[in-house]
Length: 146
Image (cartoon, one colour):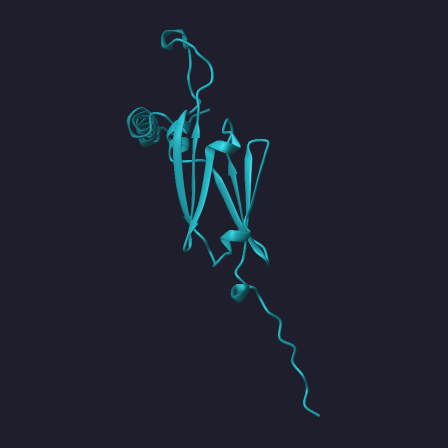
């Protein structure tokens, strides 16, 4: 069976391999660590009555988390503290992030920060921010004139 030789096919795959090598080595050498250094992964969604924020905070104690709302900006601050006492030269691999983090988000609507509720369970912080009364959807009934 004869196969048609396409010299550019090998050239493209070699270029893709070199691009990936360069990116993994120099552009983002720490992978998941740099992502966590930017702050924890967060999901934010709206219900009819509230804005709900869920943040993955593995290894963080609830007392090490600070939550603030200023205007339409929500800020999460905290610190992941190193617990074990292992000498640096004994590590074979180290991927877990330690240190402080801070992330800020624009809230999609006005909220009542004084009535907010924060629950920490299994490494996930769930923050429920009730919407301000004036932004909650209101239903207006239409009456027919007789």
